[in-house]
Length: 204
Image (tube, rainbow, N blue to C red; front, side, top):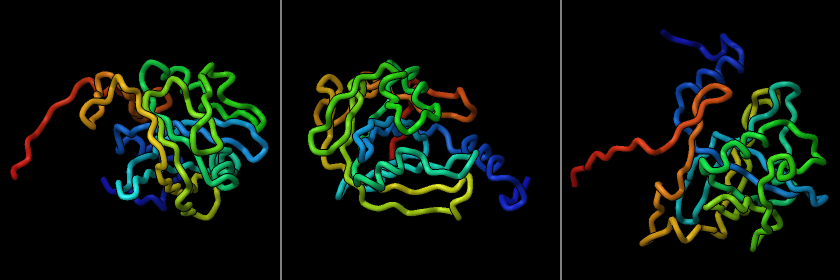
């Protein structure tokens, strides 16, 4: 089967992508507006970029209804900073509550019941339940598309501070069994655990 993305809707392309690019890590991004309103939202187009300097990327897509950018991106454009919280299974249900499109004057910390904790180096809250958080300064934003629904932006952020729970950090490595991260699959309700793992040794 061959599919030409120009011959189908952006929604169909999106379904094809999220069904193929699996599992996807979740960037649980907390920001603060220039008016001091906290925002919290999950994004599953997320990954690391490099370690010198330590840099991550995530991609907030424009709303499919009206093409407007999401509050997260607006806040980062205005303030130049954000916190990226890693999602563990223990608060996955609370994370899902923040995926609803709330008005800009509503802090998602409130309906989710998650705990806001002030960051150390940036003007933003982080998620108290998260066992790993990156405090980030904006490196750059690369606009993708023509601004219509389904277009997006590639946000590159430089990590300026790591918050790591001591119980999962040993000899410079993260204990996945203690972190219990989850990943995103296709569909509105699809998630995955990292409990079924295997190793393949590389030849030197």
